[in-house]
Length: 102
Image 1 (cartoon, rainbow, N blue to C red):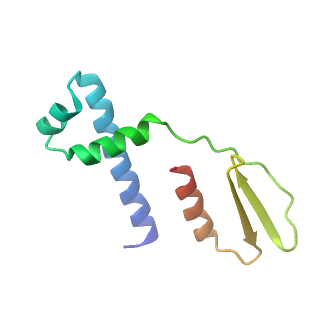
Image 2 (cartoon, rainbow, N blue to C red):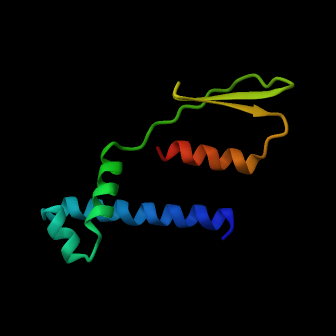
Image 3 (spheres, rainbow, N blue to C red):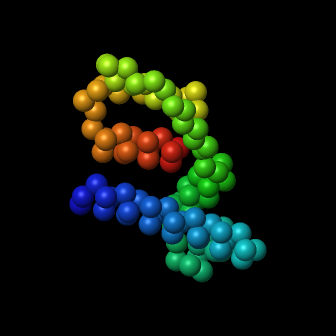
């Protein structure tokens, strides 16, 4: 599976569970009953429900001057990434996707 296929697969999974959580909220059913009626794993449903409850982590990017040795990326004062001048843009994109999903 290529990296873009993997990203699409992860996004499709996230979209599926997000829709299930939204539908459950509209249904007025208990989580257990909703999962039973929709043939869903209660464990997976609970995991995704908790994940969406906290909401997306806002990401603020600031522009930093690029130095000859690379650059430093700071995300929400929580993550700091040193990037060498020979970095792979694909690796950086994957890293940002992982950080944004937290």
